[in-house]
Length: 86
Image (cartoon, rainbow, N blue to C red; front, side):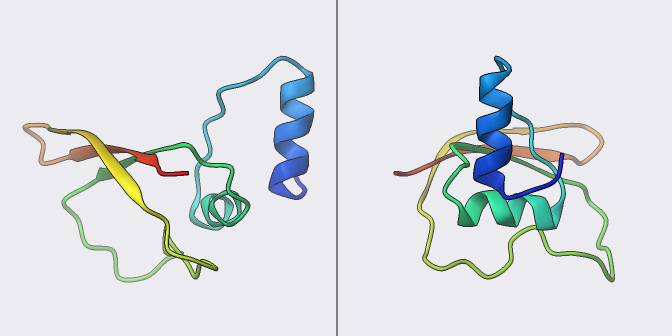
């Protein structure tokens, strides 16, 4: 879908969707700026990438996160879950 994050959420909610998976640096940044993210699950892969779109860009204010859980896997992946404080 394309458009402002609030419009996308509204359209999806009207169709019955209430839990959305948002992915991609620019897309996530837009939803964070719009205050539409309640939960973040961040998976870190043990590879340093030299270039790309940052997951977190400039925000208009600091966002407080509350840590929920962290899991690690034999492959080296580390997955952390946070709730975005209101």
